[in-house]
Image (tube, rainbow, N blue to C red; front, side, top):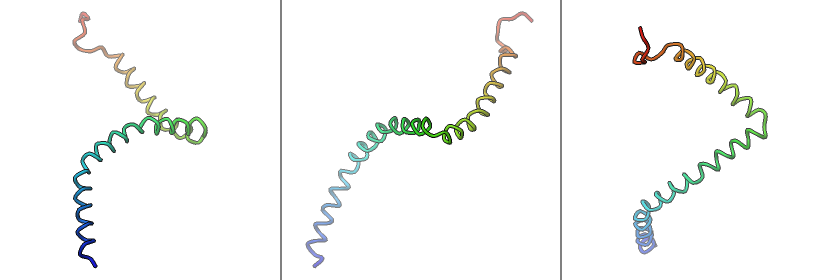
Amino acid sequence: MRGKAGVAEQAVGRRRQASEPAGSRERAANEHGFADPKNWRALTKLRLNANYATTLLRTLLPTNAEMSRWLDAADDHPAPDSHQPY
């Protein structure tokens, strides 16, 4: 009983393979379109639940302090090509 059904399945498989590149392009465009709503969903979770905010702040505070320290150190030492008299 495999004879005709097998041939039909192969034809469907070939059509599916032929349409796959077009499908992947559409899928990529669609996924990019959903990126912003996913980010907004994360921000909504953050706003509604204090645990999410605490975790995020504990992660960001040391990073922010390190960047601030790095920028302050850069301000203390002017660039060598600045036009200051020696």
